[in-house]
Image (cartoon, rainbow, N blue to C red):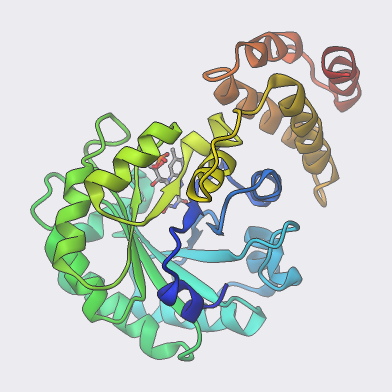
Length: 329
Ligand SMILES: Cc1cc2nc3c(=O)[nH]c(=O)nc-3n(C[C@H](O)[C@H](O)[C@H](O)COP(=O)(O)O)c2cc1C
């Protein structure tokens, strides 16, 4: 999907959210194969005072070796996080040299270590600095590279939301994703979808609505309230791996049955295999990832809780493969 296609598209787009420690290349591969997504975003790559080497970019985004696409052919956007405009620009150029075609800037991360270094959501207190960062990166990048940004509604309160959105637009970003909460609201419900509508009214670049979409009903409601066409799914896509598929079918005029446990079982085995095959993966990585995913899946599938309990004390890949074979066939 080129930036031109993005901007001209009248069909609602569905994005898979960046999620540090949760949606890595393996999860992107799996969820985009299940289907429904138009695009996905990498976990943030933290930019401090150095320029990352090729190996670091590839570690965060192995899809750079495959034309920026997941195995299923879904485009991947590379997300950067930092506060030093010039060094963000140098790193963005380096990433483009390695093959990145779309760059997203993170102004929403609430992590204390990131905020202490003036990155992520804390920048929402300083619209001028946000504008400087976006403009510096935009001017450094070739014109055909899409630049977007992702923000929250503010840090303590929502008062900077409109100014930050305007700053991002004026500095030349091509679209903006809004996670409809302040930093201090963390992930506590509700997400303020009405604020996304206010932002959308205030600027003219496309706005992607994000926050608390866990069902097809939520998808319809966020679109109604935010007035946005485009939506980004995070935790909902991990808990219900077919949510994007249901939404895409709905946008094509069809209602499809939610994924049954039998089908999910085979995706769970695929995911575990993908994690086992990860270059240099040690025993711990695939086991931790599987347990993490099951603990989220169990919110939607009680069978995932049984499986979680069955593998909870297992420490070897062989043991887990045996249990998966018995439980999932
Ligand atoms: C574990 C976790 C990691 C996240 N990592 C990132 C990240 O790397 N970059 C980013 O812009 N947002 C990140 N987010 C925020 C999500 O992209 C998204 O905005 C938020 O979860 C709200 O959407 P949801 O309700 O659909 O999950 C993260 C959220 C969580 C829960």
